[in-house]
Image (cartoon, rainbow, N blue to C red; front, top):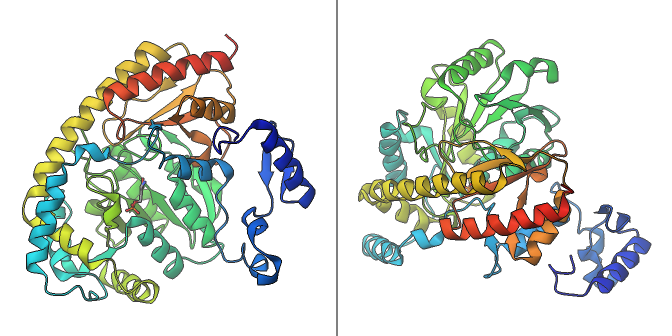
Length: 438
Ligand code: PMP
């Protein structure tokens, strides 16, 4: 903490003592200190009365580690070897200049768009999805402000409070937070190398009124891709148990070794699946463009709620995305991106083999961004996180994605280049060796 917030250690210890005396944190520093009331309230003058409201609402505060990650990601000298974002250097600034210039000459005004989103973009996405084997009409597509918003719309308009959401364990942190904030019970189901072990669902709670949330391709955070056979069996199981599915296809287009597997949505003859896509993992998360593919009543319901929430996604972003897809630039750019990420993945696996084989196990992902690394011996991940920060390496500890404590890290080869990854891993090995007694 002292390193993170650039103060000396005794200041932190004094502050923790003081926060403990206020009842804001509990526990012993160094052995896990937890915030039990929010710290920001300290900075508000009492008279404003906002103190009494600050922690109201359904969203919980991020824990200290997640807050630290959110802050450190924006520090320029930090090497991010767990980040779920493409390296911005892979994107030439001329691309944006060209796209925005073309968009600028086409649009007359930037008005609100209709409730399902810009028709031109829904048409372009429908065409694009055809290439991936998914047939959808524009009326089955809703444009959202990123796919995270799609999850929020689903949680708030289709799911019942206190119902069960089954998901891979571990899974994408922000989806978990979103479902939790909307009042759902999360049920983590283990995975093997072929995907979610769906047969364990039946023993984990009641299935009626429940849904399954899955990231079948290049899963976040494990990098696992569900096999064709597992997909088929999962679909049969869900049909038999009337269990609707949310399929998060954020990494669907990032398969490096084989053709992308068929989406669950493409196998869906019963309107069981709501499919989520996003421009964030292939193009630019800052566009905040995602899409839902579902049956018309679902899309209409979500679109209606979206109008109540934000009156549509950014129309500038929607036009830019339309231009990307219709000009063919998206396909050309994606081909290069996949080549680069494949090289980075290969390099990352080689570097891990050379440096970590005595210390940890990991999987070989066939696409996406992530490698899930698990230490062979128990290691204090919090300590590792803190020590890595001293070397300006930012880690994404596995704990934050999981339902239980683990000794894992989510590594990502997407944000840093091969040289940076190798340098960081070499430093990390030294830190790990200091922490784990050999
Ligand atoms: N789903 C998954 C599995 C993700 O990893 C992410 C981004 N980390 C998202 C959804 C969110 O994407 P968006 O930026 O479109 O909200």
